[in-house]
Length: 193
Image (cartoon, rainbow, N blue to C red; front, top):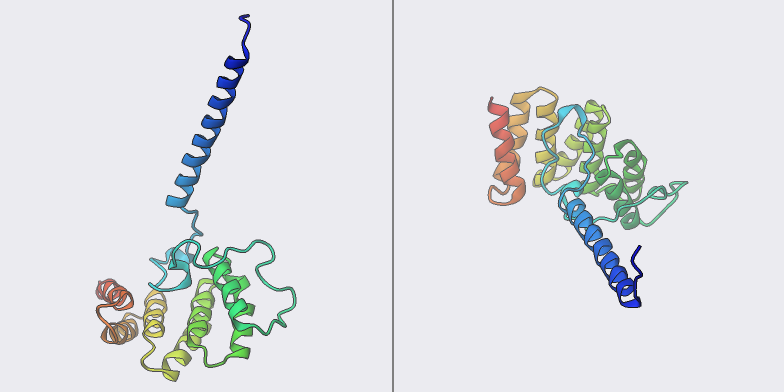
């Protein structure tokens, strides 16, 4: 076996450090570009645009096991929203339900949370509960575009195309040029088939 000089050992160490960094960088880049996504319920086509699950990476905190406070006595609605959004983004829909309900206890007029609760209920198999929450949101504010979009989406996925077209039409008419309106147009195309 050849005898290695200190220069050889130094070059080997530099090479191994560079190689380790390169493997780390390539692996990190892959997972940044291809994030792991939770499967959608019953083959759902997509989450409506603008929902927390469609936000840019890093926009909502990703929690671990402590994402939900043990007793839901938290009174900071903003903290609860961030936790619920993180759980939703991870596909842990059932765990979001008590958090969204707690937010609505603190802020019953929070239509965004009511919309998110409706979507989480739908993804956990409670379509009637979802529709009830979404109808409450859209009747509280008929100009709540995201509520109409989600109502149309859930109604479409539940199989009622005429009512879905009506809700999606309202969402489209409230802003056809923004991402929510464009998603409504896309779903209207699906509802016509």
